Image 1 (cartoon, rainbow, N blue to C red):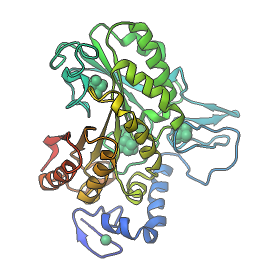
Image 2: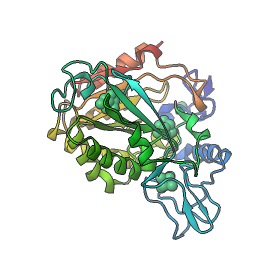
Image 3: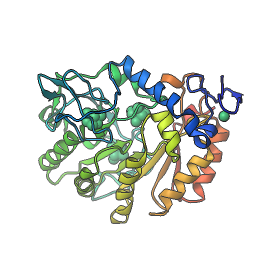
Image 4: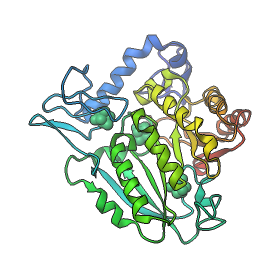
Length: 362
Ligand code: SF4
Ligand code: SF4
Ligand code: SF4
Ligand SMILES: [Zn+2]
């Protein structure tokens, strides 16, 4: 139970850490901006990462929205790179900080209600005309992230960050066998190791030649837009789906709860949405939004759905149940009532709306 420092409302849906309600963040952002920034600076500081103003330095990384500019001894925002003896060390095009495992299909992938693993890509992109039973998904979890979401459900990656002992493209290629029909890049966030995802994809497609191997990304969309064309080609060639997790429509809510702007996420999403017509089935792109109690309301969902619908009403959209964790442990899980209100708002604009993580709803 928290109290909003602006409107003085008290409610279980107000995080005690944020101590400001969703409505006041949207409508009175200038009054809380600095306070909210301090929260994110404090969290990163505990992880040994300083968010001091970036200075000019020749050692920069431009893979994601953060455009880190580092000096000797400093660690990047994602926690994956640092400067050692005047060199930027950490993952690169050939080596990544990741974990991988197999999930039998059908799996609980964000797009599993609409993707090729349902059989909708048969025969070009699916092995079977129904669920691909007997086949599996190679799940590739990338450690590190470009955002700092207070509600992160996968925050454990923060303990697994490493600059050495990285996994090579060859190691990951070796894992693919004849029953692997898709690869999912998720995390954490693949944006911070996007070059590796592209290098691996290219080589995996080459190795598999004429057999189906779909390549999919699950992302907050914060990667450098210079990679858009290459990702698009891999998706079109392989039958994969890029899944954009658009967390908030309001830039203020995104800054408050994720610590970062959502502009690049929407710009990158727009690029893929403009290309959606090139392959609707299985869908080239889909969208998801976690419904964070007290902060993601029907207005947010309606605005996201309306934004997505300007490209195509049939772009799939999944609303995800939220379970309290990380820094928002004191919020209640998503209620059925809120979820269904959001669902009906989204349905006004989009034809294919799904509710994910139904088991979490209360
Ligand atoms: S990795 Fe892609 S094809 Fe496989 S289950 Fe997930 S969304 Fe579907
Ligand atoms: S973008 Fe995803 S992985 Fe990154 S902090 Fe947010 S919820 Fe966690
Ligand atoms: S990927 Fe990491 S190091 Fe590179 S710009 Fe983004 S946060 Fe900084
Ligand atoms: Zn308020």
